[in-house]
Image (cartoon, rainbow, N blue to C red):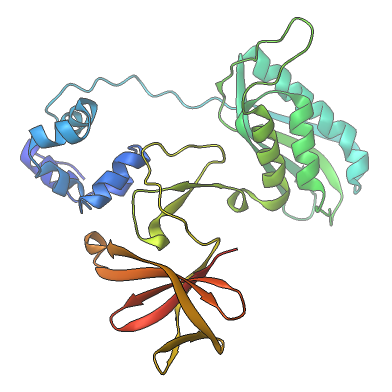
Length: 323
């Protein structure tokens, strides 16, 4: 797709969703609060107001995208990667017998990384079989690494549940993109771990055993709606400028559950409820087409459970449980 003029380029870019832009999360949250969904919505705002609310760098980036400011680019270079392979002296079906060969490959790859003065955040180990497709194991690191002990530990954690169904005659080891590596300053008498290093190692081991998608951090957002008040982030990532909500329940239901109401008294599973705190009004969602108004209360049941309930459109609902 090509644009023949700057006006045509502006129209084409205006259809892009703002979520597709690689801008900080706090900026994206501000766009959402303002009801901005596409780049065209942002371009229609007064420049002075955008500059005051955000940063001059954002306006400069928009001008570059629209062809109104110079945007020099460095020539693209393909990312460097390391690739090693080893033909085995025989056919192996036991991971214990393959262990020395895997460790030698990892050590060779880490030496190559040091030669480039780089690290990597991903390794892929491939077991080659004669009569069936290869078996592939992938591990990742939260930060660029070139320590063979750490990579071997991650591979062993990932291989704990791996079963080879066919003999292996060749090993291949492929790295992810080579990334800048910053070595830690060592103490004179004792090596002190870098800040966050222990957390990074723990995250790597958990992801190697449980999978990358199952290990993540949580951060608050600027959205007041309980369902949208948090988002997944990399473990250890902070969320500057996020809204700090009042006390919230530990367990939030995926969908609010209608409550029984008998003779004016609220009941949950037959137990009467007593409202002890509230209301807290939460309204919003108009920017997503989900305009609603809810009055939230803390309620205690006759069985001692502490619940989070709300009243909306003449009905009562249960939304969560406090510990």
